Image (cartoon, rainbow, N blue to C red; front, side, top):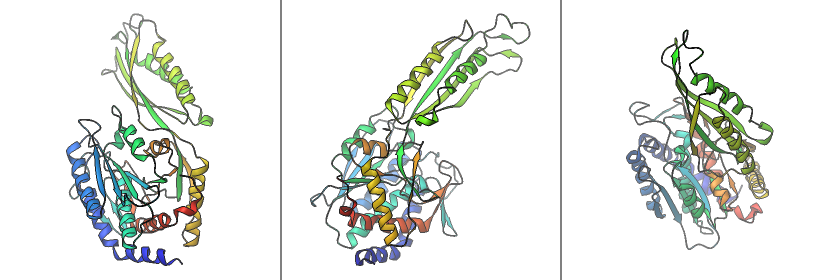
Length: 394
C-alpha cells in the first residue's frame, strides 16, 4: 500500500471525532435556502475553518435574499490546474423542523437536516484539504465552490454563471452531493423547469348551472392529461404534475384552479419540444369560455451526459478503490439536478455523488453513515495525489 495513502489514512483516523463534531456543528447551524441570515451563519463558520487551513476566499452575492457563493483556493501559486470540490450550505428544511438540537449521532449514523444533502460532503471537502496539507501535498491548488441557494435551483438569479466562471480552468471536479446506497457515482444529470398554471372558468351551482358553468378543475385535468403524454423516458424526459389547488365546496363548479408541472430533460432539443407542447396545452381551451396563464421557473442547472473524460475519471476512481480493497463504484444517471452540470458546462470533467452515503435526503428521516465519510475522504484525498494518472485532459 502507498505510503502516501497510509499517511492520509492515519490523519483521518486520528481526526474522526473532530470530523464528527464539525459536522454536528454545521448541521446545527440550520438554514433553508430562503433563510439568508441562517445560511450565512453556517457559511461564516465553515469559511473560518477554511481560512484556518490556508484557503483564500472570495464571496459573490447572487440575490438580495440569498446567501451567495464562496470560492476558496488553497495553494493558488502551486503548478497545475486546480482540483475542484463543490458543495452547498442550504437545506430544504425550515429552522427548527428537527427540534433542538437538530443533529444527533447514534450507532454509527448521523441524523439531522442536511447531514447528507449536503453538509456531510462539505465536511469531507474540508478534511480532504486538511489531510493533503498534513502530508505536504503541493502539486496542484485545491479549490472549493460552496453555494448558498442550491436547493432553490438558483431560480431568479445568475448563480449558475458565477459557478461556471469560477470553475473554468480547473483540472477536474468532484461534487460532494450525497453518496448512493448502492455505491454508484453520478455521471449524468438532467435539468428541471416548472410550469405554474392558473386556469380561470365560470363558477356556479353543481346541479343548476351545469350548462352555464365553465369548470376550471376539469379544464386543468384535460390540460394535464395532454401534457403527460409528452413524457418520453427513452429520450430521458419526464413530465410530472405535482401540485393542484382548486375548489372550496363539493357542490360548486370551481371557477379557478392552479397546478404545477415539473419537467426534466437532458438536451435542449427535448426541452424545446416539451415547452412547445405544454404551452400549446395551456393556451388551448378544451372547455370554451375558460382561459389560462402560466409562470415558468427555470432551474439554473445545465444538463449533461457522461463524456469520455468523465468515464476516464470514473475508471480512475475504481482503479484506486480496487488497489485499496474498497468497493468499486457503479454509475448512475440522475433525474435530480445539481451544480455538477454547471461545472461540466465550464469544460471541467466532473463526478457527482461522492459525499457521505445515506438515505432520505429531503426527508425528516435523513441520515448518513459515518464510516463512509471517513473512507471516502481518504479515497478522494489519495485520488488528488494521483490525479495525473487519470488520463484526462482537464
